Amino acid sequence: MSKNNNKSTNIGKTKRSTDDLIDSAIAQQNDWMENRRNFARRFLKTLNIFARPAAKPDNQSDVQTATVRRGGLAAYWFPILCAVVVVLIAVWVAFFHTCSGPAVVVAEPGAADASSIQVEPVPDIVEPFAPMFDIVRIEPDGDVVVAGRWLPNKNISILVNGEIVATERTDNNGEFVYSPARAFSAGNYTIGLIGVEPEMRSDENVFLYISAHGYKNSVSLLMTDDGSTLLQAPSILKSGDLTVRKIDYLDTGRIVVTGDALPRLRVSLTLNGEYLGFARVSDYKHFGLGADVGELVPGQEYSMVVRLHDGDGRTIAHVTHKFVMPKMTGDDDTYYTVRRGDCLWIIARNFLRRGVLFSIIAERNDIENPNLIYPNQNLQIPTGASAK
Image 1 (cartoon, rainbow, N blue to C red):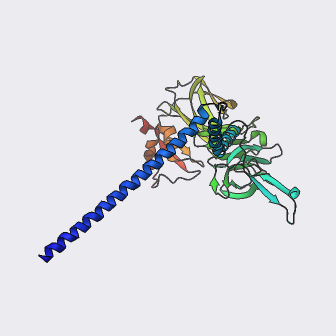
Image 2 (image 1 turned 30 degrees about the vertical axis):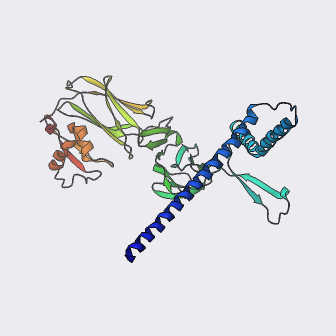
C-alpha cells in the first residue's frame, strides 16, 4: 500500500513540473510577440514621418507630436548619411575613376619628410607567352640583326644551330635586339630563342642562308608549324645560284631533273610552256623534280625551263635548256649519284613515281639498310619497275 502511495506522489510531482515549463514557455512567447508588435509600431511611425509632411502645430499636443517626429528622424541620421556616401562612391567609380596599376612608395634612406618620397607605378601583370621573332636580316656588310619580343625586363638567349651564343635583356616594352660581333660565314644556320625565368622556348625558328656571293643572294625564312614565311628574299642572283646538273628521260615517259639552288626555296618545271610541278630545295642546296611528260619524239626540239621562286611565289631566277630528243637506247636502267640530304623515298618518287617503291632500288643495289645511303654513292635505278 505504501509503494502505491509513493508512486502516485512521484507522478503528481512530475506532472506539476511539466505544467510549469509549458507555462513559462508560453509566457516567453507572449513577451517576444509583444516586443515584436512594439518594434513594428515604432518602425511604422518612423516611416510615417517620411510619408507625411510635418503640419504646423496648433496646440501643445501637436508640438509634442512634431517633436517626437523630429526626434525619430534624427535618430536615423547615421544610416541615411551612410547611404548617401555609398551612392556618391558608386557614381565616382562608375564615371570618374580610371583604372591604373597599384603604386609602390619608395623612400630614400634617411628621408624624414614626405617630399623625399617617390611614388612609382607598378607595371601591369603580363601573361607569359613564347618568345617571338620580329626581324632577322642580313646587312650589306654581312652582319646579322635579330630582333624580337618577350616578357619585359627579362633575359632571353639566342640559339644558333642549337647552341646558345648570346643572352640579351628585353626592355620595358619586352623588345630586344641582337647583333653578333662577327659576321656569319657562308652557310646554313637555324636561329631559335629561349626565355629565361620562366624558361620558354620559341614556337618558331628562323632558317638563315648566308650566300658566298653577298647579302643580296642570302635568304631568311621564318619557320612555323603552319609553314614558312620569307623574311628576306634574294634580290640579285649570281651565276651558280640556280643550276641544272642532270636531266633523265625514262622509257616510262617520265623526266627527272636534278640541280642546285638557294636552300628552302621552290623550283618549278615547265616543258614547252606546260607546267609540270614544283619541288623544295633542301638545306644542302640540292633539288630533284620528276614529272610525267609522255612520249617525247626523237629528233624533235624541246624547251625546258626551271624557275626559282621566292616565298611570295615570284620568279627570281630561271634556267632554259633546249635539247633535241635522241633515240632511246632500250636500256631499262639509269643511274643516279646520291647527294647530301637525299633519301631513297625521294629518289624513288622522282624516278618511279611512288616513294613506296624505294625497296626496289635498295634490292637492286644490295642496300641492307634503306635508311642509310651515302653522298656520291652511285645507284642503279630499275626504271622499268615503275611501269609494272
